[in-house]
Image (tube, rainbow, N blue to C red; front, top):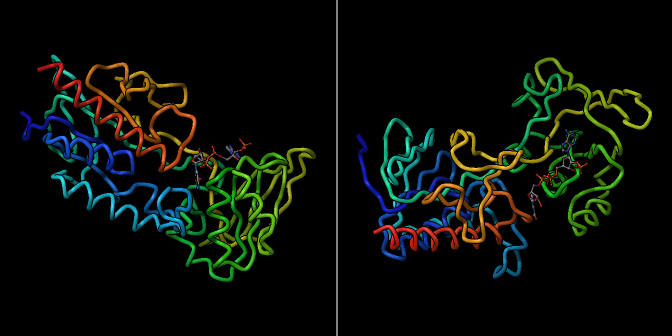
Length: 308
Ligand code: NAP
């Protein structure tokens, strides 16, 4: 039997979830937000966010997360720290399983975001936490004055690499093509950094070490030559995987697992809405996530009114 009843339950407390929470709570609805990790999501591991409007000097991800939480709580948003494992629908009602509890509601907004993808090369799992990392903000301090590799050529790889230059002696970006995917401004900054080198058209073949990472075997994709490079750390930024597995095929997703929504944030199931990085979308930014969170909350409110 469900322990508690809510109008709306929001799954995930990143910028999309916290904004959906703010809007829904401010609309005087009874709203619960469930977050397994840190409130703020990926913002919490972002040193500085400089493209979120209203902060001309940029703002730390941690500060923006805390302010978003404070603002939503001010309007009555309830927040619990639990991991959502299942969502079920029965005659229009939704049942959310999280941390051993079952919550009942009329509408669910899925804002569970995405996590960094694994590369799947030998040594990666073995040395995770022993030189292999997926979070520069969390682990940079362990690599003071070291030589490290950053894998990937997107916005994550470049922004994290630029942050890591404050700590490391030298950093090599290993990218599988000979052109970067990242936004031009990050490319310009990376090319201008005396600490950043590039290994183009190359992939990681194997990560080697003893107790910790010592070197990386790098394969040149044009010549197939494999060379060994001495690195004390390897930071992986090769894309994202949406956290949607717990929905177990309940809503329509694309081949990558991203939830398909319409402009109102509606999914293929009435009363289940989605917003932010877990959805199929063009641009993954804090600025887009908050807009989608607001839209999904508005749509959920309309859904509740119409289903009364
Ligand atoms: P991404 O844009 O998907 O880039 C992933 C990078 O990893 C690409 O360069 C890709 O190479 C490479 N890659 C993928 N699979 C690989 C493999 N198996 N082996 C080697 N390399 C591989 O992911 P992201 O950088 O994490 O960014 C995700 C989203 O968040 C994007 O929409 C991004 O704009 C956004 N974001 C924005 C900011 C910001 O604006 N400040 C910061 C971080 C992230 P190819 O280029 O060859 O595909």
